[in-house]
Length: 136
Image 1 (tube, rainbow, N blue to C red):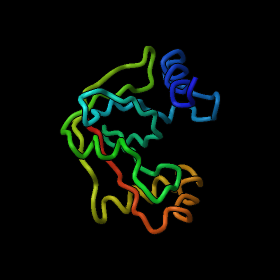
Image 2: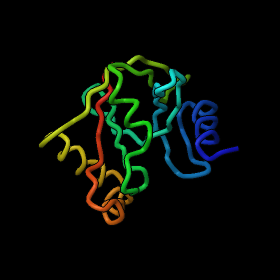
Image 3: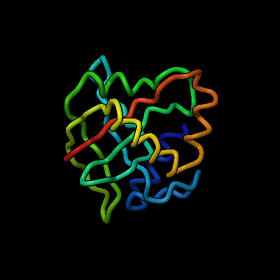
Image 4: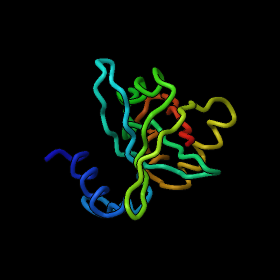
């Protein structure tokens, strides 16, 4: 079973809490990203919930390239999102990419959320990580 599918299955089986194969707790969401061919890809992503919205970042583990799902979000106005809860709840959300100072402030929050995000800056070859706000 691939790593992402293992996380997705664990998320859905445990009210959105994932502690295996990695320690995420309830900080993940599942984003239903439309692909170019019309199929849907489910991406388990770390999220910061703030003021009724979920924020996700296209870090790709510090790769110099954006993850494929970023392009899918840029092509759409709405996506389904699965959020932690008893039971896991699916909500339809509006997609907005953050820019400027708002993006920079949220990036600082992601780095405070997990030191791994700060480490990604070292290997991303100057790439600015896109950040999206998903609002129900």
